Image 1 (cartoon, rainbow, N blue to C red):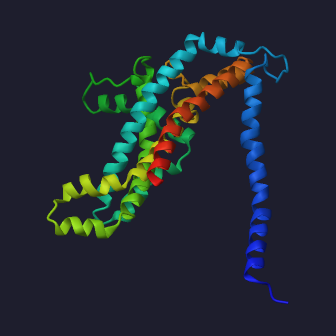
Image 2: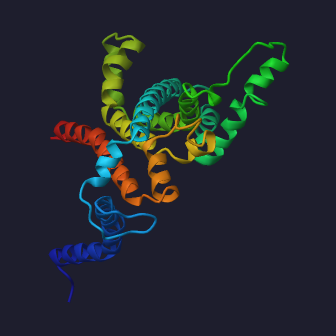
Image 3: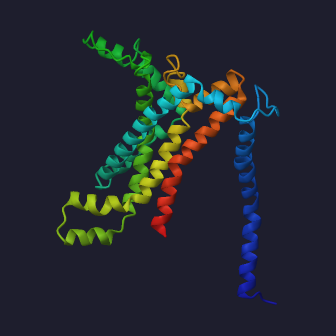
Amino acid sequence: MPFTKAEFSGRDRLMAKIVLSPTILAAIFFIYGFILWTIWLSLTRSTILPSNHFVGLANYYDLFGSSRWWRSLSNLGIFGGLYVLISLSLGLGLAILLDQRIKGERLYQVVFLYPMALSAVVTGVAWRWLLDPGFGLQAIVRSMGFPHFAFAWIDDPDMAIYTVVIAAVWQTTGFMMAIFLAGLRGVNSDIVKAAQIDGASHARIYLRVILPSLAPTFFVALVLSVGLAIKSFGLIIALTGGGPGYSTNVPSIFMYVFSFQRGEMGVGAASALMMLVIMMIFALPFLYLDSRRQA
């Protein structure tokens, strides 16, 4: 007996639920389950191994009483702010240039995207060599006849965080370019043609028509870049090791040091929760505005 359309629809929905259920259960366990586990650890006196010794908010008091934590937040503000602003600006600029259908566009895309194919550790090591005063950029320029040239930011506690910005921007600008270029290629061409017919200049079309149409693309790029900044770990470890001193410590490094080197897992878990809160503070307002825009 042939199936009716309603029966087919019901079978399709059931099959979709069966196929998706393992992924959904895995996401619930490995994402939300571990978030709840981290919350519990932050409320216990866990050391190198988890403990059920409940201490309430004591770890949070220790966390916010630590000057190293506040230095990590300060570094995250400097690094994250400059990294997000510069990578988005350069990525948008490169996307606009490539959107002009220039000759060799594919080659330029590959060149700009290549750094993103490298791991953060490889990028950090490469920039460590390049910025090392003994045999990097400073030594190369001095060997060219400029003996007083100095560029030793990586060894300067006040400037080392800016070397992290340079390396991070170099690695991810091409990725941001790809995101913006995809957004530019998705703009409604009829609107652009209408503006051209009305006599609008090329610059005015970009400012008044194309860029406002990229609002969803800006949202995606911003959330991704903020997330990358907050989670930065491998790049900083390979480039500066968190030093000199604590000068390039960020919350992710603070969490690692306290959880696995100092054996204060409770404080490390509390710092991990604070990283999640920071990410939510940035993401939720944009999610709200995006939902209002689509409503």
